[in-house]
Image 1 (cartoon, one colour):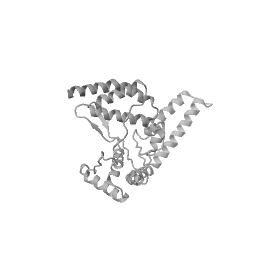
Image 2 (image 1 turned 90 degrees about the vertical axis):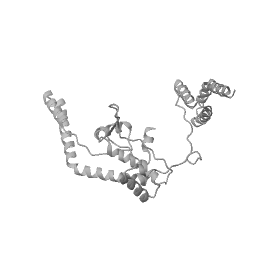
Image 3 (image 1 turned 90 degrees about the horizontal axis):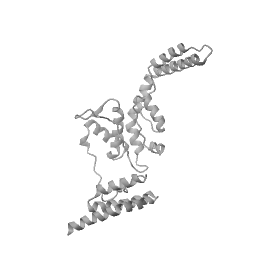
Image 4 (image 1 turned 120 degrees about the vertical axis):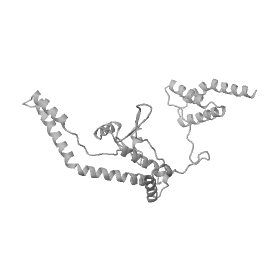
Length: 263
């Protein structure tokens, strides 16, 4: 009898699910909507149908061209969430020591330093290696998407600056070392572009001359200032900057400016 009652409860739950979810979508206040959805999913877990309930909600949202349903986040100060210490043993000794040193220097918990360090390491590896699955030819780049969340005044900026300092120093040295080459490229390119424009539309316009200069422009080896990190630009500007940097760049920012831009 008890098993039949469970099945009946599940059936009743799904019979009402479409109407319940549809009524949620009428509510424009997303926080209120997701509060109700959290209760819906808690009931689904009690019945053991969490996966099916989530799939139903996803289908209803898509059918109505609405944003997908989200449960309210569980606060970190809740008794249901236990924060674990970062396992330093998972890191090579040199990185574990580096992470601890930065944490001591900035005076933060080591956990604050983990994601910024991984982000900088990911930046350093772009274009140098990929991960390949041994079973086939599928590969993935080593780029990471991370977010360090902390309240104002928790020394996020100091942590990010400590890890980015070697990157910025390398970039400065590279640009100083290649300054002459970069300026020569820019000068030669600008000169050829003016010549090409004169060959196309000047008094002595010449198609052959224009083609010759075009070939010279295409043969130029591009040289640009190295820019390893960018944080305040539109997606369109980011795409162009990635082109200049050989399709590699980081967006590492202690203020989360990229989210303001995207929004």
